Image 1 (cartoon, rainbow, N blue to C red):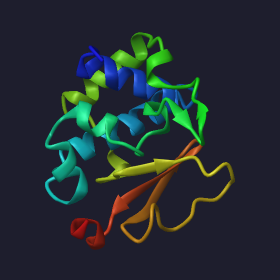
Image 2: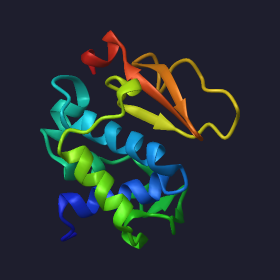
Image 3: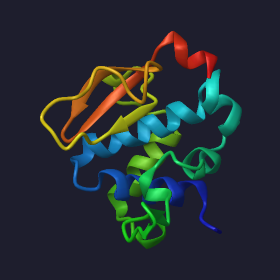
Image 4: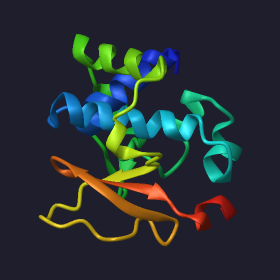
Length: 146
């Protein structure tokens, strides 16, 4: 795939949070860049400071998967056509912009319910906040052992 890091991030932002408003899209971008800049744990080992490696790490972002549950995933980064807002948010995040109330959030997901579970994906992440439809999770001490 010949997409630049900026293009990949803009496509992921649109795919994962295009309907979540500017703050929701910025929060997703913050999580990606928190992973890119992680100093320890799985994302530091796997990502090695690379936006591309973080976004394309298997099993991390539904929008980076061509198939989900054995079926073609039509809503993926390859089918996105980012608009200027997604590029602006990607540039902001790459330049160091952060949604402040997320802390060091490394995960987000849409629970499709009004409540967020206290931990995600397991005991390595603890709930920090909800922005529109997504719940965000900061790493616990256990994450650094991953």
